[in-house]
View 1 (cartoon, rainbow, N blue to C red):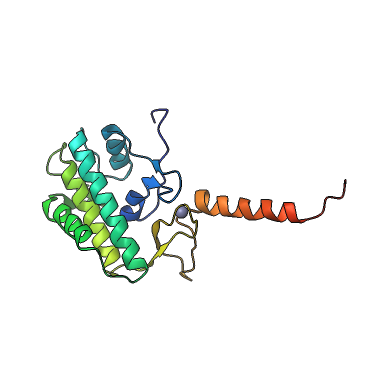
View 2: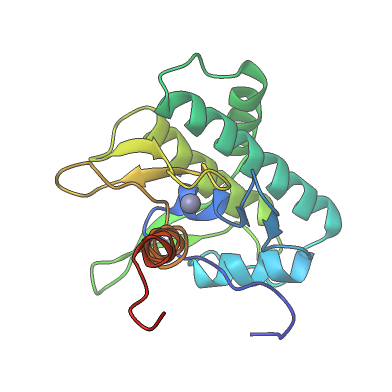
Length: 191
Ligand SMILES: [Zn+2]
């Protein structure tokens, strides 16, 4: 992985992993796909490899990402879906031409109509977002409890009580903050 770029946060839900490429939206935002090349890297990691990506395609991807974020956030708090966001998600979904392929091993792969069609990959992500937001999948949309994050994530835990978008980042940070607060409160024996 090229040095100097923020790492990806990889979840098991494509649409919300994608919205997670911008984190800390309510704090010091971290852009994890700052260049077309990094978007291509992210797509490759997620089984949607393309051989090139333009700045225009990166702009399309970010527009889709923020639209999914807006619609998923609204769905999580049971608010009306923002029409503009729904439009973008539907446009990307209808303009994608990826095909689901069953491998001999019984796994699903995506085949893009051409290796440079980032739009096909975005179509797959948009369709994933639609299935999550439409409530078709086993899980529940929720918002991360970290005040600087508030990312929409898909809770597939059995109890549906997950609080953080990512245990390794937001979850840990909250735990550490609580630990430090407790340390300050407890009297020091050496003094
Ligand atoms: Zn979070």
